[in-house]
Image (cartoon, rainbow, N blue to C red; front, side, top):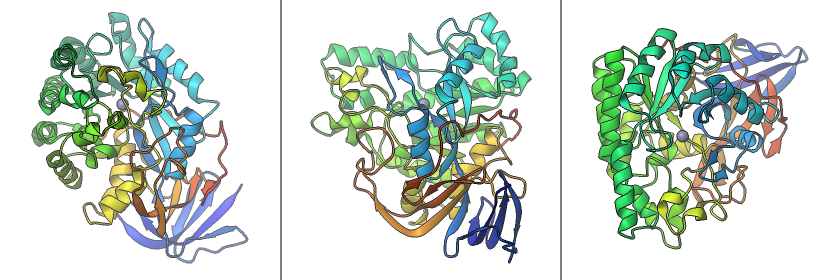
Length: 462
Ligand SMILES: [Zn+2]
């Protein structure tokens, strides 16, 4: 069995920071301590470097069919990019097609992922069709390794479910140890606004944002939280983008209900003004919910610092500017929704979150790794550095600098949201279950070596 000794790293978890050696035997962390003997093991000197648990991105869409096209990263290119950014686990959405069982949805996503996977992965099931037979299947989802379901309160006419369906699934989820995730936007109001803007000839990318006002997100967040509280069910609100919605979540959490939320990196850095960029460049920033305002950004930074929000994910869903985003050149509603980011999350949140003191280093680990593992049934196998945990480890050089660019990123997409941004602090080496997969600019991972994670049932109230 391969044995690696990582010497003198500055280990950072959600709770602790200390200098120690880590002994990795096979896929697991075997020991942590001072001056562990080298004994002829493969020794990695981490002096002057941080060692973090591999990051977990619980909201991604690799190889996703959307609006007549397919997200530009598949499970291999997306995994390579994730690994270079320090992410060693992600949870993707297996989308149930109309008329399909949940089992079929999971099998379809296994067919997309299994042979390509180079990091570890799990699935949520995104439900789009919920007849009685599928409702009865929900308690079986843990048999497929899936313990969270996503329902959409937006996308009227395609993905949106009504309140009765949402409420019913919350009750079924409560009884079967599942966590319901919601995309919280008022799909009815947005549908009216989109049609109104189209009728008025307002077709540029900015109208994507203007047709999805923050009140639509706040209202749906409050409604979902209320339904979860009536059902006595946990709830996780994905990609929260604005102050008013976070305020509703905070209200629900103050009752003690197990109601949680995430934001995504991009909502902390961009505003709807980015959608006004000329020459259709605004389309690069089109995602749902949309980018908001500086006021909302400030509220989100506060929310992640004080635990009103529990996780930061990416909602990575890349579409090329040339050839995909331009499907909506004549009509904003046809722009494929989604932005790239699976590679950038750690670097951006470190240089623009930790370094300026907006969040602590421990909180950064908690938001990007530990809480995602706890909420989604992967802890303590993932999400921490502890004896017995998977040896998913990131050796982080706090002094290494980079200018982020589509020219040197690993994502299979022709632009980067953070183009030209300077970062200081980035991964030097990345280990997946004890195997070195990234070393500087070199890639040592392999297709098919990523492992599908059967997740535990929901148990933690955060
Ligand atoms: Zn998403």
